[in-house]
Length: 207
Image 1 (cartoon, rainbow, N blue to C red):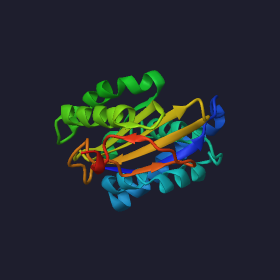
Image 2 (image 1 turned 90 degrees about the vertical axis):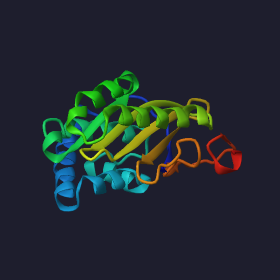
Image 3 (image 1 turned 120 degrees about the vertical axis):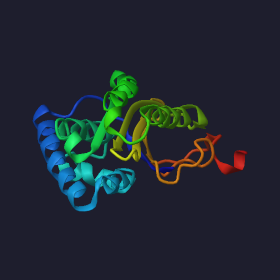
């Protein structure tokens, strides 16, 4: 289900290289501690919580209230777990822009290490992106999609859309727990500063 959303000011540019490198190192150590102490499923639950996710980004050093927190944190997590993902049983696929289109390929690359069929995970990734693009017509175009999953096949999605008219970004969080139907109340959370009146075709009332 979607666990939440967050609305953030839309900013362009990149995080400084020195900051990204430090964030990746710290993300690696903090994720390792959480997975060892509480398990990879708990890490997925925490990443699917928009408030915990925002706090995690600030703790890692990206303490701007900005759309860049989402993309930089996901990138730092992916980079930080590189080479350690098989040991921890926690994998990160996707990213920003063109990198997001490689999500299916990156999932299939480690599919033999996961207890669920890789195509099931690819389907979940694609459906989460489709729902937040077409099913929830709120004016935000998805440009970032990160799919995080463990060896047992549990997963979470952190993706973000932009609205150039309002200069806002909206972050969507999904968690595999509780997803029974991708087209009826699937979300775990959405975070946003401003509320509009979107055409939500995945709301239970729209059936």
